[in-house]
Image (cartoon, rainbow, N blue to C red):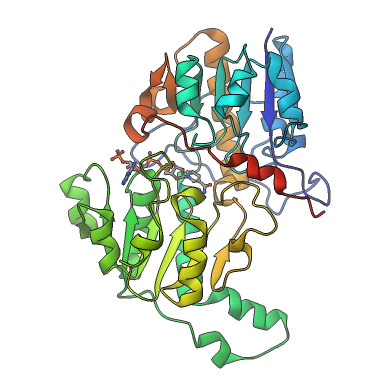
Length: 401
Ligand code: NDP
């Protein structure tokens, strides 16, 4: 029987929710483009409940224990004394979410001789050293599309929030003020602005579609070009290089995976190519950007605003400069873990586990690594290598409540 270690974020400080703001979730039949939602044989949870925190257990306990497997659920994931490190020696499956990632470095994989699978309950498996997983023939899978639209909605919210100066204006209200001029001295309309996405995959394209009705000029760059019909429908301008696109954009949004080819692609030099006063929104991965170069660009005015929900490492230490740099609209990593998204990726994780335990193939669209090489969606979107370097810094985070 297998030991499954599931690393999840902590419950709310006020305790696991007993009630919810809404009674149900809208019904979605399929994802854009036709991909089906997760299809586990059954689920043991109420859709719309908190599944991603420790007490929610991704709704997996009943299923796993009914098969005789052991389920260990913990939020303790960083540093040598963490529960995750203690449990690795006989773990066969490790599950975690990118919001609170179990960094599966080569060292950790070496400490887990029985490890067969690493599952991302969400999208983005850069917290696993993919090269080490390939070398050890460990399967890596994620729940493709489960939260792509959730993130696209967050991107649109953040673009509007930055450009219209929403957060400082909200803060004036809370402070008891009526400071119109203070609110609007950095407030603009997005109408007529040029917005560009680095990558037009599931999220990037969904962002473009959602921004179209705002009458913005839409740009993108990607390794593969979108079908001509889509370019025409959205009146898209394609750029052969990211650098060409930065030069013409008022707003840039990053929607590509983190892998060795994209790590630190936004840095001191590439930021110089941006228009002065551009806005940058990054909900893809913190490490796509050079941390200190972003802070300097905001302080010096090269960027007018930066927002996103992804950091490196996660959780970000209290002294991470993105917490205090000017003109930012950062959230913790939440865009892909709305209650709506949790329901989908909990079901997707269950589907992947059913495949593993029943010896059935995992859908291609969920596979990142299999049989010692990049596979499925991983072969299409990732490059081999490791992007986990520096993740031990996550142990510096101190819980504040
Ligand atoms: P997709 O795989 O649908 O899209 C990724 C796109 O990135 C593909 O079109 C791929 O190109 C493109 N790409 C890869 N490398 C490059 C590169 N070097 N330059 C330009 N484009 C590149 O994934 P999603 O849209 O669903 O997700 C994108 C990323 O967003 C995830 O990898 C993850 O890191 C992040 N994410 C964040 C979440 C959050 O909660 N904040 C939740 C979900 C995802 P091609 O296929 O043409 O090779």
